[in-house]
Image (cartoon, rainbow, N blue to C red; front, side, top):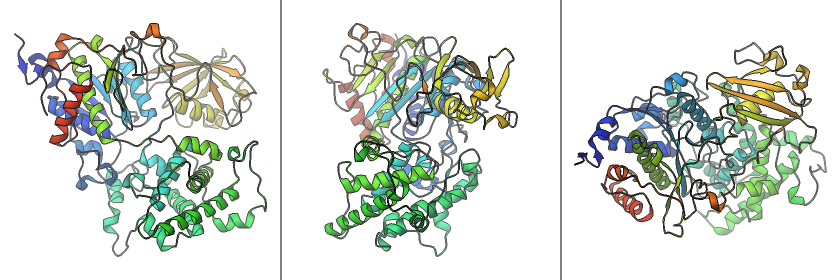
Length: 605
């Protein structure tokens, strides 16, 4: 007779009180996950999260209250919380070996890549998760048994940290998201999650937690100064385009420059001044590119004029609707699209990015996905279910589980799929990771190799690069000051040519990668490099029919095989809830109705 403690076997329940688990991220998914772990019986939980709590977090991150605003998320969680980044050097392979299980609840790819590599190096099981609107996914990663997080190319990220959008954009999509937020702040429904002003509580701008908290609560200590919303301020100016321009693209940028810690390792932004641009503008500034008008990239002054015209048009639309009216952004509405195109491109120019055509902006702006609290709750519950299988020694019964927006043909919202084996071509988890990069050795600088290729594209933290030239030439060293003079030189200056091989070591990640250099002078415009054999920003294609049973990757196949472990059926305790009791019951019922995962011992939490 199996002895149960609640809905778990006694042996498993006892192990939960002693096993040490790590949660990386205490945001939307992380808050739900931490709650679930405590309710399930986990006693030794450690959390890593650098972020501080913002007012906009409170609508979906239920562990936090208004009194916590400005404080460290990890410290407020109080589960042996550590208030540092998962990319911090102290969290090395030895640190990860302290845990029986790691659970990711992250919102950015760089940190996911890093934790993936740490768990591979430490040979610790990792449960990876993510959400995009009403869609979600949970999967298990185990060295040598399953695909790792980086085995397959990932589609472009659709959600981004607020401090990246507001303070340190590094990609055009960051500026497009900012411009859409700005539209709502000025003309639409204001949302605390869509603030566009500089983020004074950015944890990267201040390493002192007390200073960060003080900045976050500064609005309560400003004496007679009355802070107003972006929309209120815009109304007070009569939506004057020039005043809006100078506030957004000059004053706010100059304020960002005072956060000098942000720019120690980044190129600082360059403020724009309307009067100076007007005085220096050519009468007929040419657009860049050929073909249709919407496929041409406008010049800076042309963008200023487009910004002015779009603001005036949108202001008139608001006035026609009457007092208290709001506009709704629509990519097919020309004035709204013109506004986002102008604002996004001006911000790209300020942060030294290549600007985009109206066509490109429209295609990117139409695909940005919001975060949904209930999706986070479902995914957090699934993480716990997979974790219980792992701790029961049943890795073979773990599944990748997809949460769909609508039921599939079998009327299931949750579709479990067999885990795929490691990819033999993976540049991370293969026995000898190797990759070929196509670039121009006469135009690619050492700094670009380090930052754009090794760090940004291949997710390294502190790469050391040695040229396999028979002399062991050190091209890049992670030790400060050793090779900084190389940064401004081109790869060709060091004898790197077509067919050269670079050995790259990241000792923080316990990771070695062999890079084969393929020289070319035929890269497309604005493309610095290409990874050979990979289609950038495209998800892997669906598997062929004969492989469906063993390797289902898109979460929509009817032949997806559920877990059938009899022991697992006795141990599942469902936590698919938000923090509210009524929602607990509703989500539990949805789980039984819409998933193939069996639940014999079902408790309301």
